[in-house]
Length: 347
Image (cartoon, helix red, strand yellow):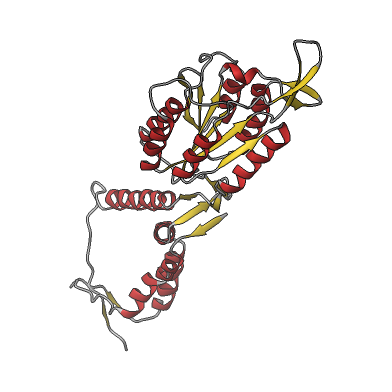
């Protein structure tokens, strides 16, 4: 779409005519004259002068140059198609437990029994795919905490590296405090931070390793405004074979420290969730989408490209051309100007 940023500048178009009409005519300064017997024939000469004026190509070039100059002052521009404004979402860190206990097969996925990590990968991958606009980072922790993916807008890379993780990669124990501390450090070191800082920490046990106490790490998180949502994963009961050959029910989540996970969430303004099956885990991530909604795109904008320099350049070229012709016309070799004084004798 084409437009004029300053259309009122077009009011300048009749300015040369106004100047011609309003300013007094320039009086003649020559003294030369020519004796003629009468005024007969002067009307024909006047009509011929007007015709020659209209046919004067230099005059038309000057008119076109003026039109281009006024058009340039009106600032023509081309308005492009509407584009979505890139949204600036939150910094979202995911911390996933890879300790040995995540190998417990107390979850179901697509009708088959799977371990906790497999169910976590499936549900968390869908969650990551929905977080358009957020900078997402991935921390894997067990006995030690590792930054697998720094904060990035590349959600596909985060999903790929999450799916490639395996149990025992970071050790058999659980270092919850170290995982939180690592998330705090990575978010604190960010030069460009979003308005919201969020950590989603998923584990199935208690803090049994690491150098930092989980509650102390939560204090550090609260200081930089990092909100922590903790998820305790694991079924509440599971049927297993006994030594005598019979079946017995056990609690596979007996080691889950729900009290500490709840305090971590409360201390940082987050919330603690309990996932006992795959459906419950999916519901938790759906609730996280509601509690930490994806940033909506702002009102679209149209890119504007200014084009004033094209008519301005055309006007400049025409004026330059006229100047060259006038200069050449005024310096023809051997030509001398004659001034003739006209005297008439009527009767």
